[in-house]
Picture (cartoon, rainbow, N blue to C red):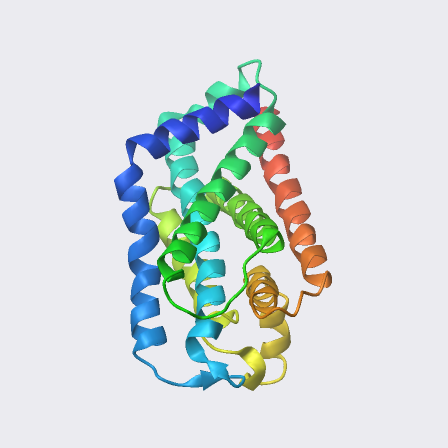
Length: 243
């Protein structure tokens, strides 16, 4: 019931701010598609660059959508509204509260990614998106929603959330196989970037879209990130509860 209560809160927030959320999810990726995809007439790996870019933008949208849905809201609720303190003294199990926040954030990320798929449908690219693509998008959203939860516990003020976006999300947005291939990166940097969650997501979704399947090792990497971030967030919550 605690999970459903959190998801219901997220749903009401989504309905209330539907137009704001939708515009925020569409404007930046759409600019990327226009500037990079249509403005740069080139090829990547022997195919039109747009075929490389669209899966990267979809992956990027699931990351930013899920992260932003949790990071700022949880920071405000924890620091100013003291909502977390109220949850701790309520009968709601804390793990249900955490899981509800993470699932809600991931669904928001999937919504952002789905909007990009809808916008690019009129473009005849021949790309394939199937159930595996949706599962990877959802898993990627879970990872970044959990990361946002961890960072929101570390935040000392409301302004920390944008800083975390600048320090973590923005570098990954440009480095992690989204706009350009990592093949030309220097040794060492390339290996580090390759194991980041967005790189794994972009690679798998791009491989599926090209009809090549995907490497299950990418799923394992995302699950490992999810477990690590989940354990850290649970540790933060229960440490605060036991103070």
